[in-house]
Image (cartoon, rainbow, N blue to C red):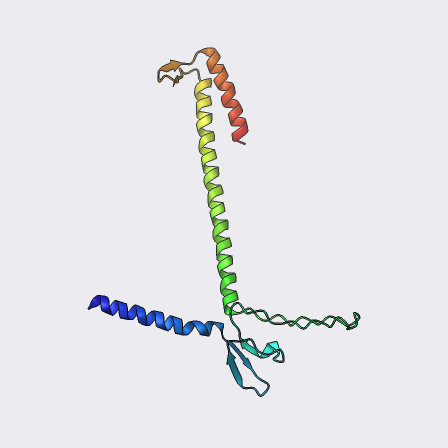
Length: 172
């Protein structure tokens, strides 16, 4: 019984969706007498843009009046229609784009902050190693074969120089 109810509800929902889809492509305008006209086709050219109440989100191409080839070239170019106020869908898209840009900027700032924190931590580690090398402490490291080796004076001097160079390059 439960699965048949779910099947019936999903069939009803898909029928309602299919029934409402043609409404997405509807045009609405006022004719010369002031009556509302609804159609799935764009209004005739005689209807001014201010009388068009609703148009589909992606309107089909409207034909553009081109001047005749025999017409004088001195004729002034037709003025473009005045820009319409942005629709609610345009405002929603603009708001979402603004939110995406803000989120991207925040992510970039967080990434930069994390990078700066890693750099500061690495610099502190290098400075500590440099203090150990310069402090006269006995320093040992593990070699490639996994054995501990104590740094002699020549190796210690080379390590001090290498560490100093790294600090100069990375810790500005």
